[in-house]
Image 1 (cartoon, rainbow over the protein chains, first blue to last red):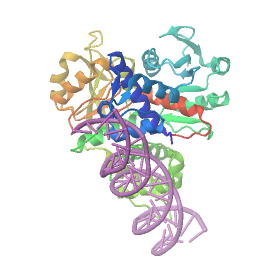
Image 2: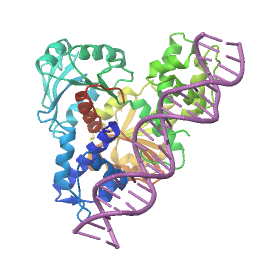
Image 3: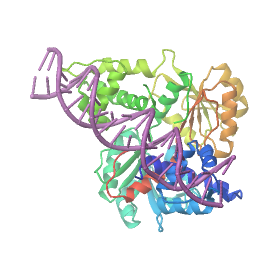
Image 4: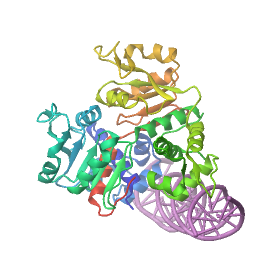
Length: 209
Length: 209
DNA sequence: TCATGTGAAAGCCTTCACAGCG
DNA sequence: CGCTGTGAAGGCTTTCACATGA
């Protein structure tokens, strides 16, 4: 019913709607949202139907209402906290990217082995030594993590995270993490993406993901 | 026939096979590769069939031969060059990640607006001022790019890249780029990924992407 | 006329299941 | 046996197409 694809598109719709709303747009038609997001109008309507929002044939969808409805699906009232493990370039890119994007999501703590980074606050986020991982994740009731560490240590970090209650991981390491069945892992594999681009850039006719 | 999903899995298989090969494994069965990659054995066999490689029921697949066959599909003999646009944390993470991963792929040039970075060589890659984009991309015959710039300028950069012949883009900016039909765009949307993790970490039973 | 909501069709991808073979 | 190769089935997503309503 609500699978990863739909969640992904809802996230995109919300971002686009939020931008549209900020520039004063009060209503959208499915074909407009389709064009903005790169989906078809039928897809947009079906997604909106799936989450139970209603538009009107005369006026399309109310932007504010649709944003609220999507947020009901995507967000929790209390918000959700991530731990970021690995404060290298990638980790810092993510920290820098975060503020203001998703008010309901937060990086509550970052961890690294480099003691130079520990104790400091980068992009509004406190950095701890990796030794503090277990204690901090527990104390801050963190249930999700971003793994941005070298491949060799990724499985070890994942094990430690799972052991202290983490049930969702965004994994940037080029490794298939082994985790319990009740833990969700989303992999971002840059090599895979690069090779897709390289392959399809050669083929004549192409399209987006 | 050879769609993005298959290309992605082939890339994963090759990485795993290369690791296996390095540690002395000469043959694999589909169920072994399946376990390593998180696919089913049937999927592995079907993918291998699709690219026209043959194993033997008695001995499975020859690792070296399979790597070659996958490489025939994924690589070009001359290799392919990327331009990297945006040498912030994300750009530098990608530069750092690159060396040795895919010998046939190379970042031939990086570009940034920050003149401090220009003229320097970071992670084995020369950085130019963004003003040099057109000339360098043309001179180096670059046909693919990684866009790691702020969202506001991403479309402009994409337009400039397309104008000088780029036909494949890996886009990290949270924007749907508008490009000609013969240009392939692969989007890596971190917000989307984070929201997926946040959503599925709440649901009881989960699984990988 | 032009939009939404949606059952039904189509298309796509994955998995099943088994013939064939060492 | 246990594995590959693969036609056929199954399941999942997307798209079609149209009833309905302003």
